[in-house]
Length: 288
Ligand SMILES: [Zn+2]
Image 1 (cartoon, rainbow, N blue to C red):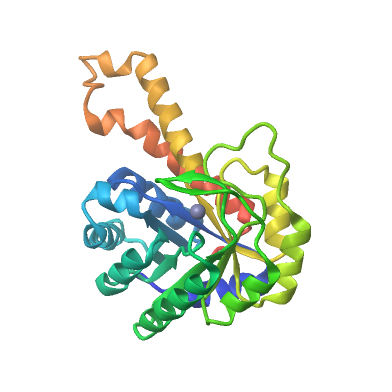
Image 2 (tube, rainbow, N blue to C red):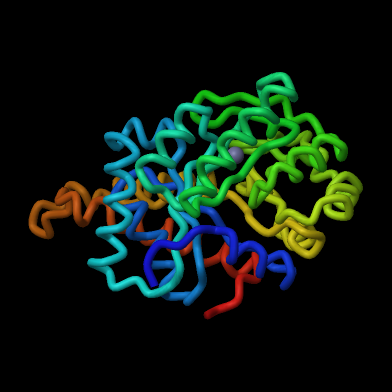
């Protein structure tokens, strides 16, 4: 199994009341850790690039080739969806052109009518090539790669209107935010989630999956969330393991060549993999 689009995976997830995780990659180590975790757990997975990460790595085409070639060299057999996370209109069009399997068009900061019109256009372009589309209604709070949202609750009516464009999955604000959750965060709004899940048959997406307590994630998944995005949690895990390696003085162990980047980055890479595997278990993603 190589790269696939997300439509079938998420229709099954919605029907089976489980979620599939979408994990952001930043480089080769991240890519290997995410794909390795999916293979070890024998579960489908999304690997996604934000616009910022793609710019950092050298462009969408490079990101796609990195994932494709890593799938091949690691002998990955589970379904993998290459997805654009929070793309603007231009980025979504470029990723459709380049050959991603799935794109998110994030028009939450546009007037709703414009978000709707542009979502329709992206759906038409993407579906003509068998590519899945995620749209967003209501903004996700916090800041991710320069995109800031206020964390407003998605309107049920707008969710229904956007779902009717034929998008394959829909991100909706239910009190979730990107980045580290503040101490006074009041939790997910399950009433709104229930209203949207009842009104819309499209699989729903939970952004800002890092830092939401496990019980709330499990409950949201049981109520119709089919895709959960995780980014910050893996970054924190990588940073912590790398800091421990350096604070332990291992990089200064000249005899063991502890400064070798392949050794220096290994604990962090392992930590990302463990983080991904833990989340897959929370999401209840079944093995293939
Ligand atoms: Zn997001």
